[in-house]
Structures are given as structure tokens and as C-alpha cells.
Length: 233
Image 1 (spheres, rainbow, N blue to C red):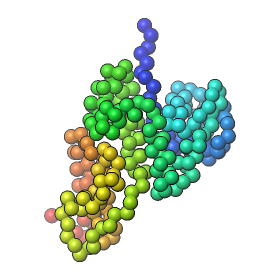
Image 2: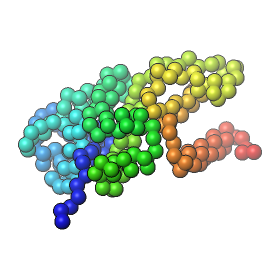
Image 3: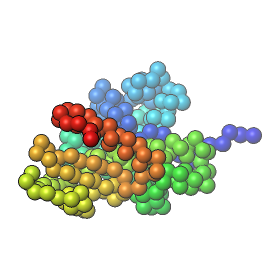
Image 4: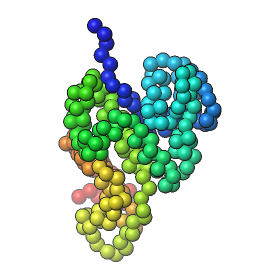
């Protein structure tokens, strides 16, 4: 009996894909390379299962292109790497790359830009022919890609209240224009004398993720209290 194979999907998220393609671009720019040399630029000893999977992921994000044994960095990848992180040009290029994988487009349509639980997405992927480990890896790369995209989107400056004004948490959150937030992501901004405190998170969080976030915020507040010379009462 033959080994089951899952449909094609990027085995790494876009953040890692950009980091990987940079190692190729820094050495060879957009010159044509053999796939074996490209694999070596990625940090592998040559062509093997792992290096081929990474090369395939770079191709699905539109970061490399080529035929047969030849491959090179694309113009899209060069635009992501060339522009600074806060530029509209980079944000546009990252969004273009994030939309390249056809499977991610299907997930966006079916699950409202990812506003669903990981379990629901995994279950659907299994019904589409994915074996469980591949479904798990797909959810991970999809979530990582959505998070990277959210971080890269350029937002308009928000006019914050003066430090003498008092606002409720809901009022502070409402200061961020809805149009400035990507779908499926919430962003809370709180203005302090020293600067802004910004929290960016998916609209949907599982019960486990909520517990993890609460634990992290408790640690953050304990550290802030200690550094400010206050006691945790």
C-alpha cells in the first residue's frame, strides 16, 4: 500500500520564508542558481527532504522562481528585502506574498480570514485529504503567516489623548480606526507618558491561548511594578 500524501502547502510560515530567502539574496542577489547551490545558501548540505520542502515553500510564497534545476530570487522577494520595515512598499509586497499560496486563500474564504479555532481548521484540512501531521503543520504556517502580515501592515498614526486625560479601556481601544486594522486582528493602544503600549492579537483566541496570554500579562505587570518601585498589592 502506497504512502499517503497530503495536498501541497507551505511547510514554513512567511516570516521564516523571508528570513530564508534573504540568505540567498545576500549572497547571490537575483542570479540564477542550481537548486543544490540554493539549498546550500539556505544552510543545508545539499538537496534533501528538508531543503526541498523549504525551496517549495519559498516558491509557493512567490519568493523564488525557476524551471528544472534552476532557481532564482524573485522581484517580489527583492521588494520585501529592499524596502524598510515601516514602508508602504514593503507592506504591499508582504501582503502579495502572503496571498500567493492557493491553500491559504481557501482558508481565508472558508474561515473568515482565519477567525476560527485551530481545531476547526485542522478538522477541515483532514476532510480535504491532509494527514493529521500535515494538517497541524499547515495550521501553524498559516497562523504564522497571518501574524507576520499583521505586524508588517502600515498603520496611520493614531492621535493619543494627553496624559492628563482619563479614558476607559474601551475608549482607548476605539481610538484605533477599524480601517487601520487587518481583518481577523484586534489592536489595542494605550497612551502613557513614556509612549504607547500596543497589544495586537487575533480576534479569536482559544481557551488555552487566553490562559497563556493572561499568564504572560501577569508576568509583564509584576516586572513593570518592580521596575517602577511599586509593590504588587
